[in-house]
View 1 (cartoon, rainbow, N blue to C red):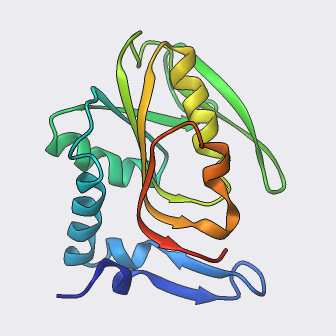
View 2 (view 1 turned 30 degrees about the vertical axis):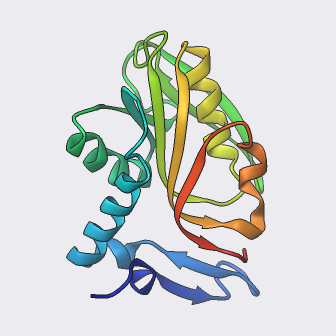
Length: 174
């Protein structure tokens, strides 16, 4: 049996020279790779006490929903501004070039609920930092943050240092 890392396609010099792009689509396209990914993330939660899984579009949906389903937990989507139909709370955050706004339904997290955030990749940590602020603004408690992959060289954990952050695969570079 192959290890999960063997399913991740590494593409040199994308999107710019000197960067190695870690492509998650190659994991998704293989049934065994997908199973290893979901099982790997789920294993990071074995000792966690939580009520809700939160995931940002789109890859947080891909990995968060099966984990929520398997563990019989609710799933709350975080979307780009203007994509959710009911009353929302929003948070602006910085990107490498510019900024973005994400939103959650205002009634998606109840005060006191324990939340796990799941996404495919931690790079600089900006998106997940914004999500933690949204969850906490609604009265939720972030008890763990899980990623399939981590690019440790981009120091995303620094923005999330007050949280229990776990990753299935860690790459030392960018």
